[in-house]
Amino acid sequence: MSKRCRPRLPDSLGGMKSKRFLKWSFLLILVVLIGWVFIAYWTSTNDCDRKTALVNPMKAIRFCEYGSPDVLKFEDVEKPAPNDDQVLIKVHSASLNFIDACVMRGPWPLRLITGLRKPEKTRLGTDVAGQVEAVGKNVTLFKAGDEVFGAARPSLAEYVCARERALVIKPANVTLEQAGSVAWAGFTALQGLRQGKIQPGQKVLINGATRGVGTFAVQIAKSLDAEVTGVCSTGKVDLVRSIGADHVNYTKEDFKGDQRYDVILDNVNNHSFSDRRRVKSEWRLRPCRNRRSMTSPGNVGTCGWDFSKRICCRGSSVRSSSGMLRNWTKRI
Ligand SMILES: NC(=O)c1ccc[n+]([C@@H]2O[C@H](COP(=O)([O-])OP(=O)(O)OC[C@H]3O[C@@H](n4cnc5c(N)ncnc54)[C@H](OP(=O)(O)O)[C@@H]3O)[C@@H](O)[C@H]2O)c1
Image 1 (tube, protein in one colour):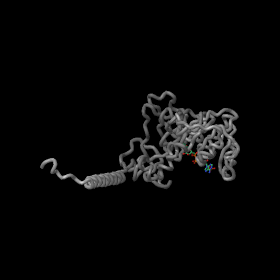
Image 2 (cartoon, protein in one colour; image 1 turned 45 degrees about the horizontal axis):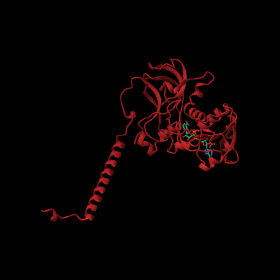
Image 3 (cartoon, helix red, strand yellow; image 1 turned 120 degrees about the vertical axis):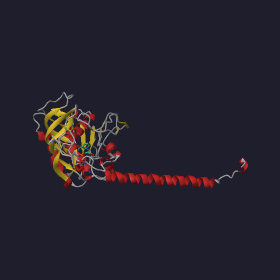
Image 4 (cartoon, helix red, strand yellow; image 1 turned 90 degrees about the vertical axis):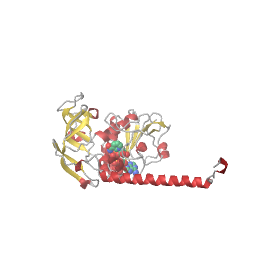
């Protein structure tokens, strides 16, 4: 057939073909995705399903299914062995963090990471205090018998392994019970306030002065000779005062008045940008330099944006997507 006689497809027919192609591609992707989720869901498993005999058993608290605290069991598990950079600790005290409760309950978006049907990691506990039992060959800071505390997962067990740089020697005037609750909340508060570079006599506001981070923040700021205002609810005013702060009771008043602060550590993020601005006299916006992950006492917290000249944010890297902006300190 000559070129001139070859029938040309009408434009509308070409358009229909590409529409059909897109439709089928979309359907194919959808089917593959549904199939993948289905397979991933039903093959999702954990070490509770493995029936191999334990070589070196120890007791631990674990959960084999997602759910309320009723899913927790006290069972035998394999005792961990430290690698070259780790320290094996005989646990004296351990504490939970908000992330433990969250992982145990298994909200659906989180299950994409932690296991769709069953939790991949079945053990809990983030902080630890105890005695060093053995050390890896690269460990230089600790030896067997030392009393240490710091961040270690999963610490709700007889023994846990921790990286050397996630631990410190326990001071003699602190009990093992006290030390076992310090790491995550304490170092988060410390890092946040350090970024604020507090000077004696400066006015510091801790929004959310109770619970984990807040109570540490009040005491740390007070020990730096700052004038500390803690924001809390009615029932906790006495607690916040007992750890050194003046107070603002958020159910009766708020911190939006005439007062100005040199440093604000915000644990709540319940005020608008303009509200916060009102209690500051100078604001600049720039990206935060210290973007870090929560890994060890020397390196705790995550930064989002730095809202003024010399302040850096510290943050909840783990809890929510708004975590980046959720907690920050700021300073003029
Ligand atoms: N805990 C940790 O180890 C850790 C580690 C890294 C990051 N974080 C992040 O740090 C933040 C604080 O965590 P958290 O565990 O210390 O505490 P939290 O359980 O999130 O407590 C929130 C604080 O907000 C206060 N609050 C609630 N409503 C308020 C309001 N309307 N006005 C003022 N304050 C209000 C609460 O005070 P009342 O008790 O008086 O109601 C409490 O002090 C969270 O965003 C968390 O994700 C925590």
